[in-house]
Structures are given as structure tokens and as C-alpha cells.
Figure 1 (cartoon, one colour):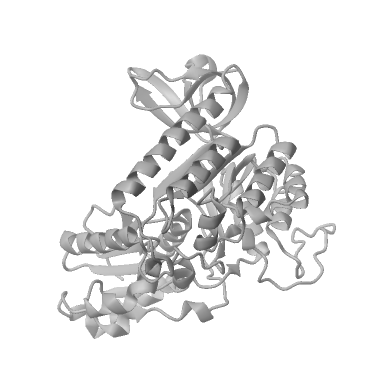
Figure 2 (cartoon, rainbow, N blue to C red; figure 1 turned 90 degrees about the vertical axis):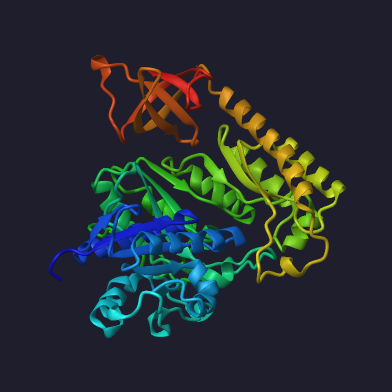
Length: 474
């Protein structure tokens, strides 16, 4: 290739996208590319797009245009969910040079090699050609895309994608059309990657997926044997589930924490929770999707549970775990939501008192069933309702964090920062509570990616630019 071509990446959307970007960066780096910042001049700009809302689509278009303006002679490659759902429109409008849909990201090196070696590299930058579109019918794809990472730069925890696709078809969501049906990663590959990352010093891994709770449902069933002497891999067929995978990750030496990303309430059974509790590396931090605290609204959303199911899941987690951190997402102002239904949601959230609630105003997504429903609310109503829930969320979060004042917790240190002339280390507890630790100096030198016991003193002073709990090394 002569001089190294420079490639820049930008990621929009979820942690799954970030994992896939990390994997694509590694593929290009291994192929001889020099990875540079997205704001630098590059020969190739790769935008890993998001399509979860119309706003995400717009942001994806903006970043594609930004790359084009930065270097009109560069190759602009748009990949991911927005490409998958809007590829035809992107072709007609010549938005990017290369379009790569989901489940083709693993081919990015060969795709770019073909592009550069063809006559198309001499084309007018304003002309994008249909032959450089790599988007297929993902609804028919049953194969898990073979992406992996060997190292993660700039992080202390590694996000690990183990599942793709979704079969739920919630009425407001485009993701099943962008990501296809559920596909699970071979557990042997997951174990191998976690061992590799742990050997490189990572203490915590976060299992992620588009619909993590469905992990293993599509894999072959059969007998799963326990480890035999000299055999590291227990998988000779299924049954494989999220729980069986966690049980085997638990055995990896050097791994300190296993964190799960978003779960569905229906997976929270007594067997599942007790199985997790038996794995002491699993963090007592559970993100349970809710979206609404009103059964009628949940039904219109086509969610597969009701508030009684959700309450039962929360109760079970609190029965088995000591003060688990339970977080959720809530959509305010969904189609047809009445004042009475919103009040049911507000009351339900007050009753179950979760640690963190991510509040979103309902945003219409083209191509979904909800778009065609009657009863869309004006924006000022959605704004007012989300404001009420945001105030509640801030209050409940502070109450949860206050309960740790005076207690000793274990913190994974991540970043050293300076505030008001003092040096602090920022890190997270196993419940994903942010803690700042003042550097004690030479008597006890702290370092990144280490676990330390911290006595929580209180909150940082309000005049500092950051906020969170403050503690001292025990």
C-alpha cells in the first residue's frame, strides 16, 4: 500500500456500535491503516451510524456530511443501522461513497481494498455508485457476524458484544428492521475473547447485545458438559443461555467483575437470579427495561410484560441481592398517553424507587407501527411530563447514593482528574455508582485500572465541575 492510509472513525448510538467500531478499527490497523482522530485529515472516514430515532438518522447524515467537508477527496464509508434502514435513499442522494450494512462490517478491509483498486477511485467525489453498496436483507441472516477485539484502548472495562438482533417488534422501535432477528455469538469465542482481554489487564467486562436476554435461544440444543481435566471449553453443543455463559466466565482467572447490560423483566426468574448470585463476580447492577408504568401504554408499545411482572422482578432482585442498583428507561408522552396513564407511570416509579431512570420524550420513528397510531401528543406535553420524571429521577438517584455515606465500597479506578488544585481518581463501584477518591500521595499511590477499598465521606462540593460521591482510601 506504500504510505499508510489514514482512517478515522466516529461512532453514534449504543455500546454495541462502539464494540463494532473497536473491532473495525482493529481490522484496519492490522491491514496497515493508521488510525487518526475524526477531526484530523484522513483518507477514509468511517461513520458507524445509528437509526433508533429520526434524530439519530439526522445526526448520522450530519456526520457523513461533516466528513465530506473535512476532506472532499477522502472515501466516506457509512456503516450500520442507518445504512441498513435507509440505504436506498442514501444511494439516490449519493450521501456516501461506500455503504456497509449490518453483518458486513467484518468485511470492511476487503470492501475498501476493492474500492481503492478499482477505477471508481478516480471518480468525481460527487458521484456515488450503487456497486459500492453492501447492504443485504438482514431479516434472512441467521449468522452472527464474526467481529472480535484483542485490546481496547483508553478504557478500564471492556464492552463485549455477544448477541445481535431482536424479535420483539415493539411498536415504537425500528431496531428489528435494522439489526435483524436474534443471533448469538458462539460461547467458545466469548470465553476466548474474555481470557485474552483479562490477560491484557482488563478487570471488568460488560456483556452487551441488542436484546441480551435472548442470548443462546438460537443456538443448538444438546448436552453442555462440565469441564474435564485439561479442557477449558465446556461447550459441545447447548443448551446455552446467558446464565450458563456467565457461569463459565466466572471461572476465568484475573477477571474481577462481570456486568450485564439491559435485560428484559421476564428473564428475572428465581432460578436465573440465584444462579447469578452464585457467581460472585457478577455486579449487583441491573438495567431492566420498563418504558412505561401503565399497563395500557405497555400494551400499545407491544411490550411483552406488564407492571406486575416488572414489580415481581424488582422484588426478586432485592430479595436475593443486598441493595442492588436497578436502573431503567422510561418514555414520556407515548402515543395516546392520557393524563391518567401518565399519573399511573409516575406513581409506579415512586413506588418501586429505582436507582437511575433514563427519561426520554417519545420521538416518532418513521417505519414503525407507532408512527401510524392515532393520538400523538404535542411536544410541550411530552416536555412537561418528561420534566416531572427527570426531577423524580434526580431525587431517587441522590437518595440511593446517600445510603452509601459512611460505608466502605470497592472502586475500580478509571481516570485521574484535577479539580480546584487537587488531584482525584474517578471510578465506579460494583453498583456503578461514581466515586471520586482524592490521591493520598506517596504514602499510597493510586493507579488506573486498580481496585481499591474506599470509605465514602459524602458528596463532592457543589462548586466543583464534577459531581458524585467522595471517599478516602480505607
